[in-house]
Length: 535
Image (cartoon, rainbow, N blue to C red; front, top):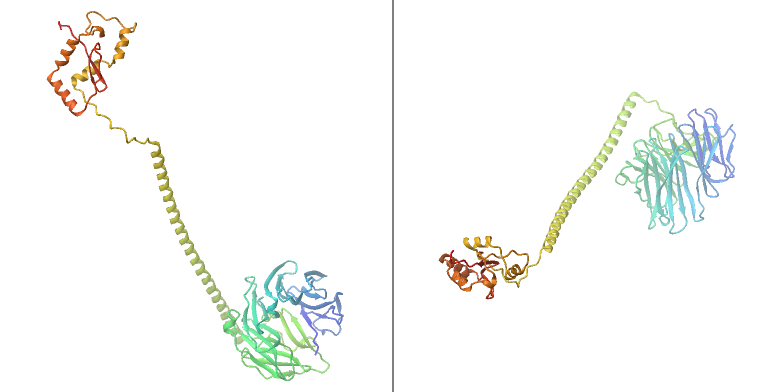
């Protein structure tokens, strides 16, 4: 069966927009009110004459229409209906013949629009990218989410947005011919993607994977397999998106038969449903215990003229449901009742309790994560304080070393200024201490040498010597009197002189015969003047 890809967008007033591809691969849409059926009385309108490979469409809570299409010339084009006219903008253009856009989608939560597309490379060692845009239609934030090697054989299976605005992504990779299903989630609160983790490794080839996320953060995945002549629909449940590896369960078989199912899909309302088309009819099976057990598939009856249709349905009527669902219907009418159920008081109380428990569990997880972050921050602060203390000790040691070196330099400078003593010089001779009489003579008679006396005797400015003076000129000195006076030394003086000569040897100068009598003690010369006999 050839299934046309269609998008049904429901406005807040109940009107519906229907987007699909014409046989010429052009984007066509129509509008209808809540009373009329899609495709009966409405007129189709051509959005763009340029042919496209595929398209995706959604609507936000303000009734703005958003369309994303990939042209045959590898242009990824974005269209926006603001209520008056269409606006067109090119998102990406692939120029390299070794690259192509293998997957793209557009989703809305309230007034936030998400665009996801994957640039795949055909080279063996090429590079592939997953690009994520988010914005309100006018301002966008672009993020290159991941980069993969071409030999990883990455394939985007499904993207899904839940009723809380989280974007869930399911993709597959192969390593050593072993396929693996990987999962990641974008959180609008943190504006970041979680690291991809492997949630399942199928044992055989699979196709048409579809992911559905419920309001309690449960993940439900289905895919098709073939075993011999039998076709199989398998189901996998992941209880928590925080630790999928530990909470993953064994896959379960929902359907097995020789007839091939087409586009199996999931829907969680009052219970979990699985729908698919087979031999022109819509089949349904349900689970009341969250996917553990499933009922026997049964066909949903419909009138022969009615058409079985597959479409993506976007509406904001029920806040407890995801805004976009993948459905099977009759003439683009959903076969399951998606209107808001009338809740009984007991059901309302139980639902409130469950919601409170879910909120408490989320809060506890957030608190535990914050406490873990605080512990890491505290340990980092302690390590930083310890490092500061070590730095302070090192600085104190360096300052002490600098002061010590400065002191040593000053000592070297002081020692370099002092003269070095000569070791070969004899010790200075000690001078004898003169007695009182010698001291008196020394202080009253100025020292003079022979040259000085000769100078005074010959100098014209010197005063004349009187006849009665006690001092005689050098030519008239009486040597016997000088010798008698020299020999007539008092005993004490002689004793002192003998004591002085015992301790220190005083050098005496040789005097000429006509020189006056003098006694030399060290550096002191004592001139002895002859006295008259009358004295």
